[in-house]
Image (cartoon, rainbow, N blue to C red; front, side):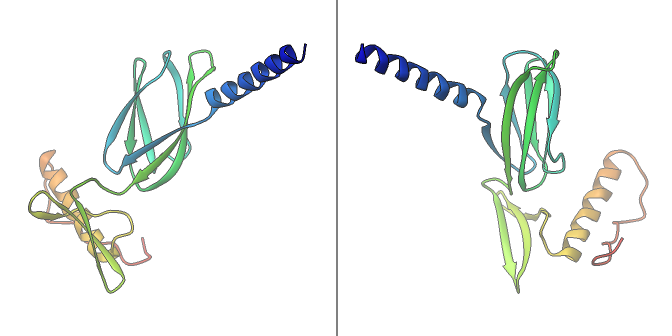
Length: 162
């Protein structure tokens, strides 16, 4: 009888442990400006991201693409067509990839991608005026690619301003 009681208690404890593990959030780590593919069991009906400025998602069938937008942490919950939870995950977005380099000068950060030559690659947290010039140059380039006329690169916004 004591062995049967120990077996039942152990089985019950393992059942609780597995149930807890099954509902625990999965941890996803992704770099900024990168995408990671995850598969879920079922077709997602609703995908909710806690902070879409940090990460975002695109659904294609039973696959979900997670996009790293800016460094930080958020969460994502995926529900099926009937509202049942398919997945819950914590998402951490880190800056850059293996070719990214950060240069610190007088307490300010400047970001580059070096593969093999180094080119500017503004990241959130970079020196404000320099970052604004990088963004302006990228907007001008994007406008040219779309066939839009431009009078030159956009100027950096004023520090702390509009």
